[in-house]
Structures are given as C-alpha cells and as structure tokens.
Image (cartoon, rainbow, N blue to C red; front, side, top):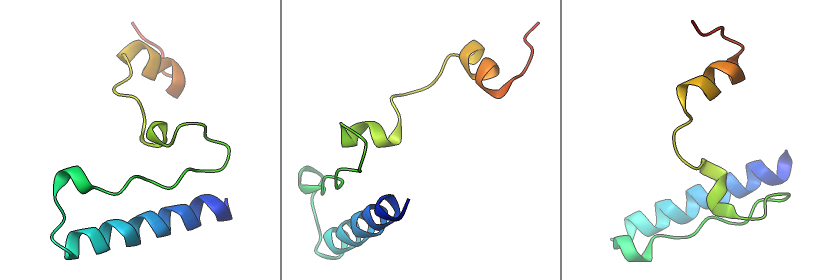
Amino acid sequence: MTELLLAEVADAARVANWQRSGGKRRDYPKPIPRPGVDDPDTTYGRGALPIDDMAAWLGWSTP
C-alpha cells in the first residue's frame, strides 16, 4: 500500500509541475509504474462496465 500511495503522490507532483510549466497535451507525464501492475495505463480502468456486470459485482439482483 505504501508504494502505491507514494506513486500517486509522485504522479500528482509531476502533473502539478507540468501544469505550472504551461505543459502541452502531448507532453503530459506518464504515470509511474505501480508495483504488481503490469501496465500502468490499466490503473484507471478500461472503460464502463455493462450494467449487468456492475449489478453482479455490487451484489444487486436484476429483474
């Protein structure tokens, strides 16, 4: 957990510095790789879940 939180803090600092320097979209800093995660781009999800999958994940019954 500590390594994940440190990576988040480091990413936030890098983005803040990029913003203050007048960064352009193409120069947006890439996130630091997270321990135990193969692809850092998957840290923030892969898109919307279908409603049936979300209901099952939350334990809701669907009509």
